[in-house]
Image (cartoon, rainbow, N blue to C red):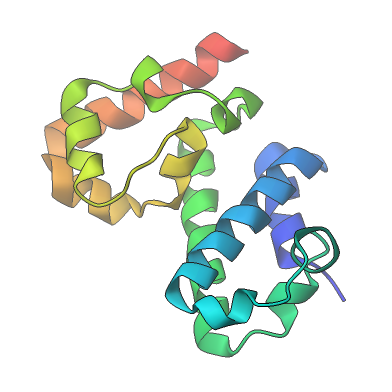
Length: 147
């Protein structure tokens, strides 16, 4: 069976990327188990989550959490480009205090990659058109600087 998370990581990075794939899987597992803690009981990160088998057995509504995060990630990286450093770069290194304060109203991202899970619609709604344009431009510049 194909692994949609693995495929998404490959689409984003342009080639197989185990680090991104595993990050996506860990983040999705954390989000799903936060909503429904019982699904995490007895789950092995190595054997179940990183192999993708954990996600296959979920009920559709919980799979929907993963699908939404994958779709947001694809949009995010299609818009600004892929850069592996985003997995570890602190948001404070790229975004303005205004951007960070607005994002922190909805989420508490630590790295630039964490921003990939936030819907672009929420970004514009939180920041307005002008500041959301500035937000995306700063992220694009960060990709260009890291290459």
